Length: 201
Image 1 (cartoon, rainbow, N blue to C red):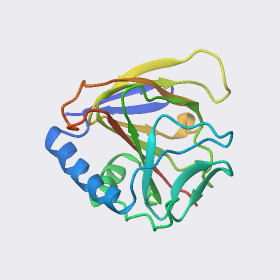
Image 2: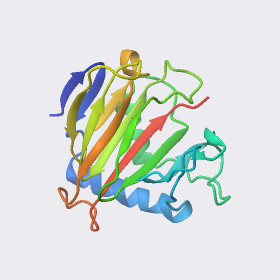
Image 3: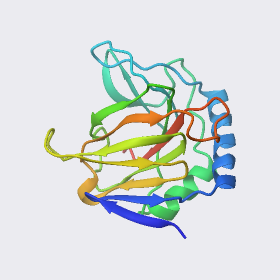
Image 4: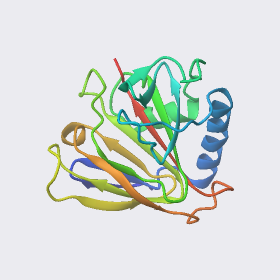
């Protein structure tokens, strides 16, 4: 049975996906990435991010010199692929809302990749949660506050864990300080995939 851990309003469903479910999800994501390949995003200041990124759904979240925003097409011009049914089933199980996600952001963390503390605030309705799915190598997930700064708390997320960021956690800063490269055998080349599901409009 899945253990649900609550930290600062973040609801962590530890071990939500068993190994066969993780493998099916990875295979579905490979299909998405054949349509919309991973690319190296840059921040508005021109700095390359350490993660590689793609998306599925009506929108993808992108960052470049023009800023942070949602776009209906991949930077190379193609439409984003549909969100796989395996991903939508996770949302339906844990989100607690009737609306379907319009974006599934796909982030790939290689060795040394990280994600600084940030808020998810480019969406229209903060009453809708963000759902995060971890696959592959373990990632050290840091949870902060609505205001930047102050004390934070961290937890290692393992392959198959799902985090729901809603309610009081919806606008709290969060990030991934590092991964334990090679800690999982799910991805043949190692690394971590993180999916974040969002209602955009």
